[in-house]
Length: 300
Image (tube, rainbow, N blue to C red; front, side, top):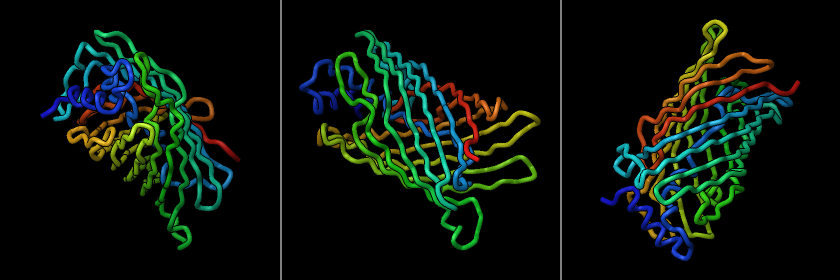
């Protein structure tokens, strides 16, 4: 069976043979589209008109390890070393009774070092837009259930060069999610989660199809005295991709992560500090993310 790096060398020759520095494509594709989501706070509880929330989240990863095609953790070949810092601004606002909208903007700093040298990229990443509605509201049922639909717009730079890592996939994604939740009020505890499907369009410039994805998120949270907590599990599972029209069996990307964090009141909102620890994966970096963010309510 082909190894992770052997697969990407094949992709490089097939898809980008007209470019220089093809040996860089493997680590570049390993780092981009790392599967980051907005802070999972107050999901399912659709925001009332004119009210909402905003969060800033920063994820930092520094790793020399990667999940290979069999799901084993190995060091990057050629003494590889991946460092990424991804920042996300997410805003949600109620539009109509039972309907709200989300927008997420990102900025990325990516670096990959090996015996060949250093490649870096920084800049604006792709944008995500969502509309969310409570389908039970017309029936007079206020249970925290929501349907969310969204699109990822390919804003991030997808140029590939000898010293550049792409900041996006250069294609659109369409997402549909079912969200559920429950509050144990007056006990300060809640459970929540979602399941979704991501339809990924082909990148027309490179004839690359990265494969549709199924994903989920589930969390339990609450407060112990003045300190909040959240323990979450998230995962996503990709279909077989094709690069330059060549089906890449064995290149399916998977990730399962445990996300514990603490929340501390600060000003009008909360600071969140935590980690995202990979539990299993395929064809993706295997490092733990350090997470820090800020969440606050907005509107009247």
